[in-house]
Length: 396
Ligand code: AMP
Image: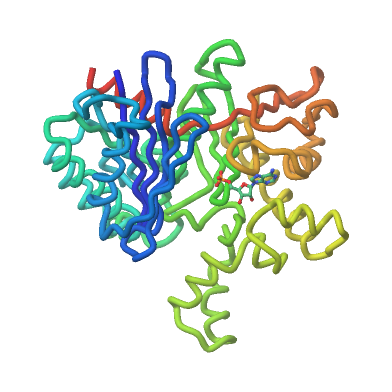
């Protein structure tokens, strides 16, 4: 079975065509700047890269060009589009309506529309990708896989905010969490590495990328996660602030004489490690500056490592113990000082990283010493494969 995985962002479209018989990625790519005059597609077949510069107005035009690449006479990977058996769509927000991946029907599309207020920037893009595929590939079954779904197992006392309860009832204000597909993928893999899923297996997964979140998972079910109603909550990120004293918003507005939208933008785009270091949202740049003795880069990394470690320790309460910690995504999968810095903060819990594994990069393996009280793993995430697997199992 061949599955096309689509991840439509507000102005981008990432995709992979996967042959599920051997999980081989036949082709993948990214259409960037959709809706602008300078939009372009980078299409990859193995090591070969093809860049197509062409303005596209919307996701439908972009998907049409992507589909043409799959059957291209020179570097095509299939003969006819009919060889694509199913399409899996990444959808950011499924609200409380979607606790698992679902086959897309007209009713599901209506449900997705109802979730737009919860993700006004992201869900419309996902929907336009779905509508476009419906028109361009009629009859091909499609599946929606939600970033929020995995976290729907959180108990109520973990997802209700201590604000007037009617906001939850009227507006759906609660913790939802994101990166669910990644947390599900790496925690399932960690369970395999630990000898199989058990009811009492307690894992904390740390998805540390440009956006970052942690999840507390027991017996394969999420009990808590660090992002909230929106992906602004939790640990600090490249440019996002993470958890704050909420009174800070009003205070900044008054001090800087700026609007609520401007504060919102500052907390989303100018905060996190970028805001503290004043250098870059990219951890490679911050690590480099720290190595040269830059004080604010060092401070940004110290804050980050402290807050990630604190969140892990908090999840020891949630899970009543921790068997394993998993690092994944751009920062978690690469060497640098973060993994070590986080684990140093957890030394009191008996967490020990093996010196020999300190610089491990991008490949699965155990990072902890044999006598570490909690196992530490590096597990590269693969959200596309997870989406393709869900798609295959639902349309089969
Ligand atoms: P992601 O969102 O998972 O693609 O992660 C992207 C982020 O990972 C980048 O912005 C960097 O901050 C970080 N990153 C990527 N490569 C490295 C590296 N070699 N060392 C440290 N951080 C890295």
